[in-house]
Length: 376
Image 1: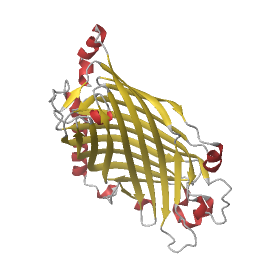
Image 2: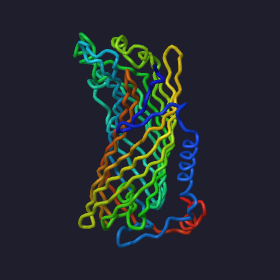
Image 3: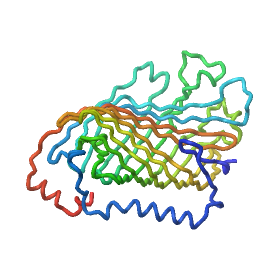
Image 4: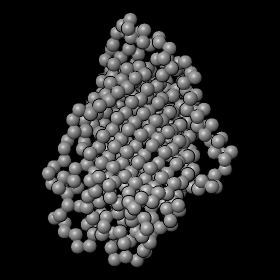
C-alpha cells in the first residue's frame, strides 16, 4: 500500500515509480541540474548593471531590525472510510513565538539572528503544548545569482482538529499533543537572473540595493534539500487509528531531492521609492523518499514531480531608510488512493533598516580583491 504513494507539489503533479523512470531522461536531468548549480561559480565577478534602473550601496553597512512569525502544519487525511460519524482529518500544528532580530548586510554578505521571542501564555501552552522552533539562514551573492542556505526545525505538534475528531472531547482539556513529532529541513538554493543589468532581486529581499525603475526578469533555480518528518510513536492518534488502516503506524518520512526551476520575477516601482515584488518558479523535482512504520517496515520510492516556489514583498525603499513586508508560503503533499499527508510552511515578517556609510579600509579593500571573494 505504501508503494502507491504519490507526491504533488502545489498542483497535481506527475509521479513515477522507480521502475518506470527512463534512465537516459534521469541522467539528462541530473546533468542539467549539476551544470546549473556550478555555472554561477564559473563567473569571476558580478557583471555591471544599469545604474538608471537600480543602485548598489557600496561601502555601506546595512542594519536591519525585524519581526517574524513562522509555523508549520502537517495534515493527515484518510480515504479508507468515506462515511464516518466524525471528522477523521488531522491537522498537526507547530507555532513559533513571534521573534525579533537583527540583520547585518555588507556588499555580498548577509547574516541575521534572533535576539528576543515573545513566549506564549500559560493558557496557550496548556492547550497546545510548547513548540520548539529553530532556524538558521546564510545567504551570499549579488543580482546575477544568489545562494541561499537554510535549516529549520519544528518540534512538538498539536492536533488543531482535536475538538472535532475526538469523540467526547472536553473543551477545557488540552488538544492532542505529540511532543516528539519533529520536522527538519535542510536546503541549499541557487537562483540566477537573466536581466540582472536592470532587475535587482536583492532590492526587495536583501536591502543592499534600491530599484529605481520597474523591471522584470526570467530566472533559473537549482535546489538540493533533505527533509525528515518523524516521531517516537505513530503519527496517527490512537482514537483515529481504526480509520487509517495499514498506514496508521507510520512514524517517519525521509525525503532527499534535487530540482531545477524556471520562472520569472518583477519589481513594480512607484515614485522611485515604493515597490512590489513577485518571484515565481516551476520545474521538475527528483525526489528519493523513504517511509517507515512503527513496526519496522520500510518503503522506498523514487518520484519525479514538478515543484514550485513563490515569494512576495512590498514596501518603501529610500536612499537610507527601507521598510519591507514579506510573505513566503511553501507546501507539498504525499498522496495515494487511501490517504494523504500535506506539509505546509509559512513565514512572514516586517523589516525596518538603515544604511550607514562605511569607509573602505585597506583590509576591506583587500578582502574584496581576493579571488575567493570575487567568486561569491
